[in-house]
Length: 279
Image (cartoon, rainbow, N blue to C red; front, side, top):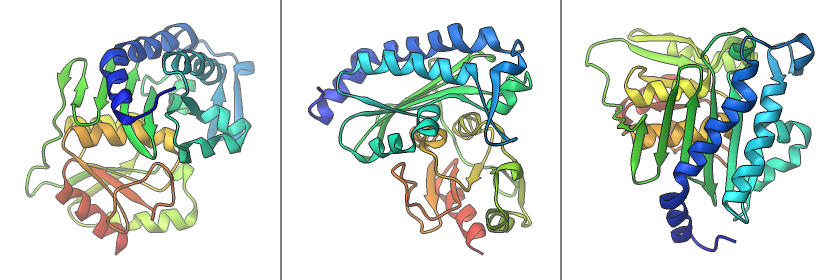
């Protein structure tokens, strides 16, 4: 059993590459063989027609659950599909043991439609603090890793989000209309302002990666599911960016956030987006 944060730091120093290997293997064995090969019997709806799950989601999460808990004895997994089957599983994020937060296929709709814009997200957290994250886009062969205090890297190259060019419109990815309530749509209308170009988001994980790379100025999201945000938020932080909720506080993976929230290339941009969302 991991007893303290220093021991987890040691684990990450020794075994981060093993986590990366596990993520790659899950994609190679359970996800990519089904990409553009899915049969109708391998696709189901969860809450509705825009909330899809496939055999690739389920089997990749099962694989990662087994490997990750073996790598770090005493850890638990909070995975999107396990929580759908048993919502009480989500409560593990609130407890003190190390928790792996897993989204086996982030961007399932894209995956189902044969679009390469999907990824696998894994984050390691303890006591509500995200300590490390792994973001893998297998159809694009891109792998990003972030470890708290040690930076963010894409395929071994350090990521630096930088700042938007002064005077240029902000490019902001927002919660997709298909996944937002009327109240959430109204909350996001503040981004229809001069100097801002909002667009619906794709895979949340890949949008966060775009912010960390400096290719997208910010995201503005209206939901809290930790598996969608934990990995990407750390990636943005370690690349030099910032994230804020409507109260001006950083987003908490344990929940209870004032929504919508933003993650942006720098703190000034995050504050500008929050001000627009609060208008």
